[in-house]
Length: 571
Image 1 (cartoon, rainbow, N blue to C red):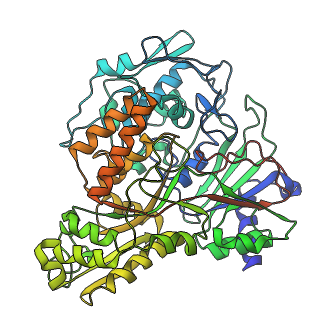
Image 2 (spheres, one colour):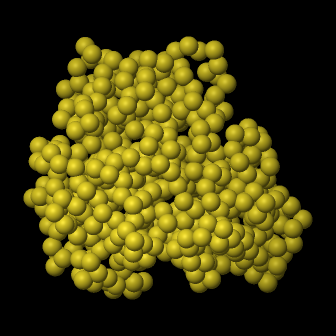
Image 3 (cartoon, rainbow, N blue to C red):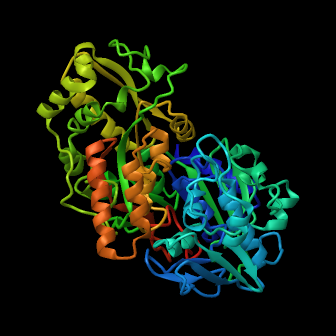
């Protein structure tokens, strides 16, 4: 297998003009999962975002490994909020070139910010800028009607000479943190020439919530970043980047980067040991196997703003042609679409998970216990917050209450899903299945691993009754956890069909609160309500572990990157 994998890698790189006479200038990076789209406005997964930050620059960036300090990038300074509390002025750097040779202008920056917001793909990342800038989590109401006006758009983002001025709808505590990670800048003219939005406020609605494959940027990239796209082989799950020799901060020392999907953890370890790959994020359980090796460096127990695995209940399951719900009825051979709307049922499942065993045995204590969605290291984490523990007597009690006793009498059958390659998520599902089934022989749960792309589609389509996934921070603030997990317009709450007006109100109050003590108290209330509603099972907040060839230099980790920033690396 080692020789075959090396041959495939050589052939792919050779086809893109990579010269192996200078092998030290090529870096091979392996990751789990598949890229969904190369367009910044569509992709909302860690794998793709880990790539995009190397191709598209942002206005400001995080300073080294810090998740709280910022440095200028395409903006010549890190702005401070104006006296009105809502206005930020970004002076745009001059003489920066896009990969196609065109010069960056403030109009490109304005266009990029508006395009990011107004594209607003369902389940995509647009809400990250929509919420602070336009004061909405989506451009559309539940019925699909547009709820923002062109006047609001014009007032929110404008160009004044060499500056881009952004005026928020309201004070928003984590705004600069969002801009450091999500203010990707694309080339306006290049986009328009290839059939994308031309920047006119008369046409933006035509480009709203399109299918990801409709975008020219699905498989094309043109940024100002240190690397540029050479080739994306979708079927082979391989992507090649070449160095941007005209990068305004200086050309990268690594000239070619191959990114490849390797979902199987054991294969990932073997490829790293044999030298087939240079860098990978590996499973914690393999850390000890690298002890004493001088050719491999292990960076372990790295801080992560992460909650994973989490087990989610879908409250409004799409049962049409869906084998995961069996008969589609509460008759012992399936479950109905609204099966998990019963809170007693959700509590029964929550008391059935062995949290301590998962932390100590599966994670080998290289994680913190999760009492809610907010992880350690940011405001709102509360190690003393109410949380569920394994208690099969209470689980049995709640199962007997669920659906007026029908669940206990009739039983159920459904499929619980995890993404292939997500070994910890698979293990969490196995633990829950074993304990639930031990309570009643009529309780039957099947497990299924699904490839990442299909897993995302099934999540968005509410086809999976129960599923395991996780979250790593888009930016370092508790709002970035409670909103996607618990707000009715958040990514996971939408996929579950979870709505709670009291929860929404608390989340919206917390993000605009400037008093840190009051804000922390609001997040305690949010997580208390999450505990009472029991719509998600939180397990742990894991740490990170990268392993890389000792010839690779310049490595550093930032918990917000979701991947590796390749620019400082060299061999």
